[in-house]
Length: 79
Image 1: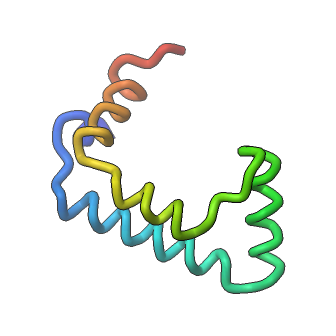
Image 2: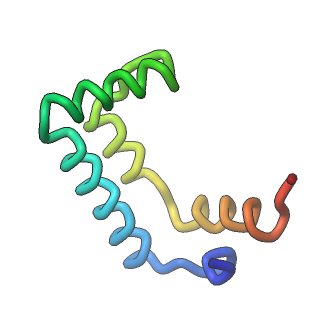
């Protein structure tokens, strides 16, 4: 995990994004899981976040953002 603090390739990031998008789509395939999804969003965020909005947000993540978060979590944790 510490390797992510200094380097992550565009290919690795793209693969991770595509995996998350696939999980996002599969989790919404049944009525029950969609209802759970909507309920969780309403409880956690106070609003429903559509799959397309989440996909767009995932696609906007950069390698620099991932590295910065990894450094904050693994090298300079505040806890």
